[in-house]
Amino acid sequence: MSQSLHFFTPSSNITLPKHHSSLFTPSLTTSNRRFPVTTKHFTIKSNASSSSSDPKVLTTDNGTAEILSRVSQTPASSTDSSSIEVDSVTEAELKENGFRSTRRTKLVCTIGPATCGFEQLEALAVGGMNVARINMCHGTREWHRRVIERVRRLNEEKGFAVAIMMDTEGSEIHMGDLSGPPSARAEDGEIWTFTVRAFDSPRPERTITVNYDGFAEDVKVGDELLVDGGMVRFEVIEKIGPDVKCRCTDPGLLLPRANLTFWRDGSLVRERNAMLPTISPKDWLDIDFGITEGVDFIAISFVKSAEVINHLKSYIAARSRDSFFGAMLPPSSTPITPLAYKGFPTIYCSDIAVIAKIESIDSLKNLEEIILASDGAMVARGDLGAQIPLEQVPSAQQKIVQLCRQLNKPVIVASQLLESMIEYPTPTRAEVADVSEAVRQRADALMLSGESAMGQFPDKALTVLRSVSLRIEKWWREEKRHEAMELPDVGSSFAESISEEICNSAAKMANNLEVDALFVYTKTGHMASLLSRCRPDCPIFAFTSTTSVRRRLNLRWGLIPFRLSFSDDMESNLNRTFSLLKARGMIKSGDLVIAVSDVLQSIQVMNVP
Ligand SMILES: Nc1ncnc2c1ncn2[C@@H]1O[C@H](COP(=O)(O)OP(=O)(O)OP(=O)(O)O)[C@@H](O)[C@H]1O
Ligand SMILES: CC(=O)C(=O)O
Ligand SMILES: [K+]
Ligand SMILES: [Mg+2]
Image (cartoon, rainbow, N blue to C red):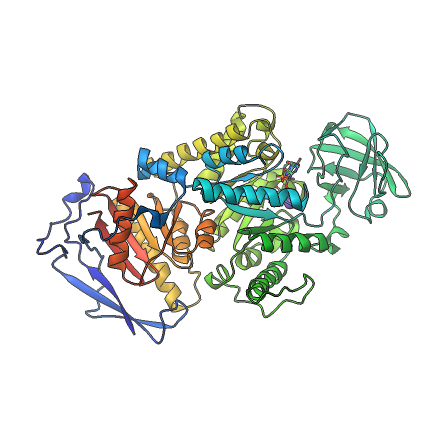
């Protein structure tokens, strides 16, 4: 079997932006298909099937690689606009403002009491939420089920494509609920009791329960106890059986289930913590819940090594296979044969993507292996800032964002981006600068936590993320602020290397030719992710035939995912796409597009007919 890649010299009749058109000589048109005069062919010979993991041999009929351009002029074959799906917000944005205006940075919102209603969720979707995050630290499974159901209904009824991310509790030490009030204030010098006792009746005043049985044994008088990484501080003054008496040294607000760390002689005490499993028995039940509910992402808290990610991925794969036959494995089952853990084959082997939350010292130590094993990562600055000195968080963030991009994994920057907006309608200047920095680093996504879960201004906070993203993206596009980044090969086979080369070249061509959009036809989403990794100037329209791939691509920088069934015939795919998008006013005649596909590893440059 052989697949042809048509590489042509750039003597086509493509319309280029004015300042470029002098570089090219238009060619003659003879039929409704216009081809440039000179053509050079590459043939990719595949041994058996066209599966991207097959070894392939690249040959060229004259040995010269040249820039490809191809003009397609075939008239529209179908105008059935219902057969392409894109989210309604993007559609409106494209119609009103055109390609350049689309936001490249994706937005994740944590859903909590402030945003769990249908209308509130709709307002977030309209405001640009790409992913809704539910945090299993809080609320009941029934509560989360209702949120998932509402998001799904919103997608179905209103044409959004909001993906769902479930975030596990993890087994780090944290406070219990405050039994009633949403928060409590600890004042300077007050004595509070932290206890592992359970209370049936209302607990005594200034008493906080702790989830970890070994707590009272582990702490020592004189230790410093930090709530949420230092939002409130206590000093341990006395231990009485299961109770630990502490004096407040830094007053502040105590939130339910806030994380607790304790420090001795200036360093974090974590020996016992290290023995807690990353995925607790309760987390396994939550994960089963997530799989059953069909969430798109599972984010794992306090990841320490790649092993736990591999284990979970095997488990998800086994569960999806088993549910195919109507059976289910218990959460404790030993993992099945591990899957390939390097490069792209890991990413889309099952329907749920696993996101590693980088929020512990161990996760920083094993960063590369963790990111390689995962389908994405989150810079969970809240807990990270409780485990390493705060002044080290920005460089850790930069490093994680960069590594994820190099390894082609999506990365989310999370926590305290707009913390003051929990209470106030405008952000601080420092918060805006922080958001700008994450956008400038070109993280795939930014996340709201308390701002959207329980803040007073969730929609306003989302608007700030949206407008700051748009402004900074425009700024670095216009002023070419972005420094080039070395993008190493991530594929393990020759076919994957071809895909990478195609995407790297297509993104470069797109910038140089100032095209309006990149189109990618992708079954697994992999080619789309490779284009996104290049962070090109123009938006990337990703066409994929599966709804779940489409929702997952929502987390990727610059991708506009469409659901569209397509064939192996690129010519007909393109013509169909053009007519569908034109019918809906999302593109127009003359727009310049570069299309790549993993159906037929190819690059084409053309004007929309
Ligand atoms: N489902 C929920 N029900 C009630 N309150 C919630 C819920 N989800 C979040 N919250 C509130 O919003 C705050 C911030 O939420 P978020 O999930 O981001 O916590 P976090 O501490 O940043 O994350 P993590 O627990 O994963 O470290 C929480 O402290 C909690 O008060
Ligand atoms: C998001 C999260 O888990 C953190 O910042 O700690
Ligand atoms: K969590
Ligand atoms: Mg955390």
